[in-house]
Image 1 (cartoon, rainbow, N blue to C red):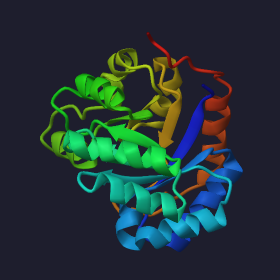
Image 2: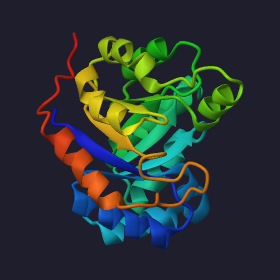
Image 3: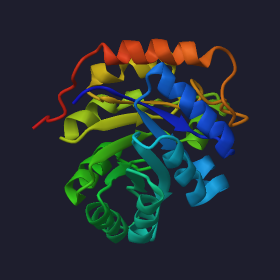
Length: 235
């Protein structure tokens, strides 16, 4: 599939999210993510306002669903989301319910392996259950906590090749990637490149990052889109 650039709108104000999204799309970003902080702050109305502002753009609702898989996916589909995130650490039935809702309402389900003891095994299991995408994820608290202890901060690139090789569906790497790391994701076979903290969103204030962010995003998008298609069938 073609490389996709996604911006994670991990903001707490819908007006700022819409403004940042408009800037990101001008720069060449393909998909918008209603990040968990935005969904907590604005709920369904936040997703609806993104859909109203950007009627033709894919919108991922990063619900991190742990229960109520069918209802949550149904609600977000009704608000205009095209993709919903369910956690691998949820009960199997929750994941199955989210997948059923995805089929019933015409949206895609992204399975997130955050905090799984074996992230590679979790990715394979999510694919077997019927998820459409894998989110290979090193969490915000996990990264910062380990770094604060003086140890090397983990990166989603550490096991990205193993996760990509384990599944036949598209993979995205999430969790504190630097500019150089984000641009390299397609080299690992992961065509969905997510730009969030610290690249686009301030990791401490959960505000749009300072500086000429639009120029930076334009450079990132140009570089990633120039990579070409990425094979996702590793069977």
